[in-house]
Length: 44
Image 1 (cartoon, rainbow, N blue to C red):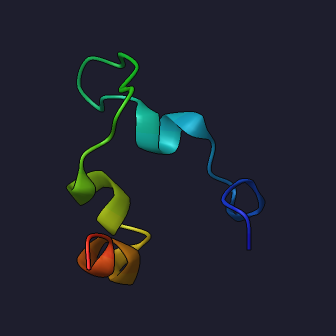
Image 2: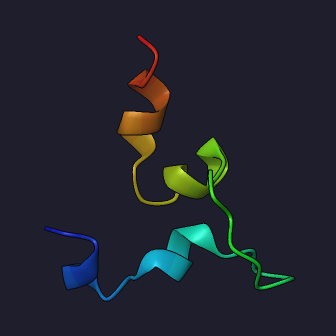
């Protein structure tokens, strides 16, 4: 299922929750909330 179909948009991953500023490269922690296995195996 696509991220947009889950009701998420760019700001779900690319917006700082405190400052609301654009995050060009989200951290692995940000990605891991939806993509745990992909993050754990990304560099392997």
